[in-house]
Image 1 (cartoon, rainbow, N blue to C red):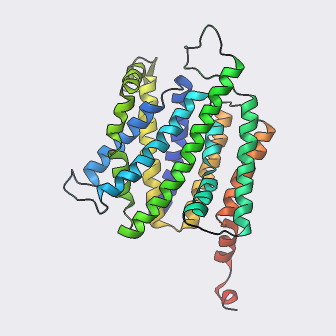
Image 2: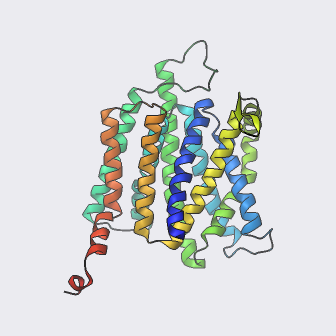
Image 3: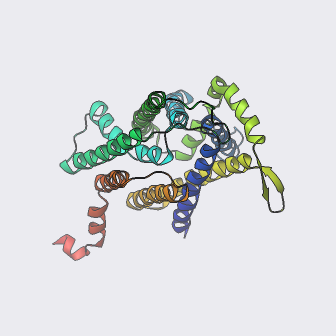
Length: 333
């Protein structure tokens, strides 16, 4: 029952989070910092109360070790959110982040000296080719993004728009490889100190908070714009600035998403977690395209199918399902 609820909340939390994120980006494409800061602050407060018990429980992993992990986590999140400032559409953002396997494999070869089977290389090729297809097509159709009601009188030239788009792609690439390196470092910490995912979740959101002082003025400006956004009438509470509603929804669903994935990893096999997360990403992508009417061509669809098919091959979902369905007697034979 606990696992079933976790799966349900993964779909509800993670898919809803994408909806609230896109609603915020549609209103203000440069709101990445306030979104990230709000998520970090909320998760840090929740962890301070329930994980560290108001600071009375000492961490199992040293803060010095956490500081390196936190630096990488902070950079990856900042790059991912800043990419929205540079004409990166939501579907491309989601597809690009689905290519984390590529970065993980490259980092594994370079740092851990790992060797992979042919199927692994094939899956990575499929994912890479799918992302390149979507990236090239999106590059040809790239448009400048502006906050609602803040379009300039003189539109930017195509060359200028394309230049900033390449900056956004660069940020996504940096975030991809930093996240991969962070995953390897996290494995090292868990091997040394044992698994403490709830504690890691808390400290990776608490320790970066002072870093937001660097973009403090930007956050302050967006706090003002959030509260000055057009009102939305809600039952019982009445009129509330709609970006406040979107931001609150994004923060709460982000917490639900992360917490549910954590419960799922403790209650289910890795196969179940992989299936749920992969399917969740695909449903989020489809919903983003249909509901928000994002441009999505036939080449985008081919690229998307390659990305998710490659992910399934990489995680050996089909082989594991066959293994699980094979009778015990046949396995012994």
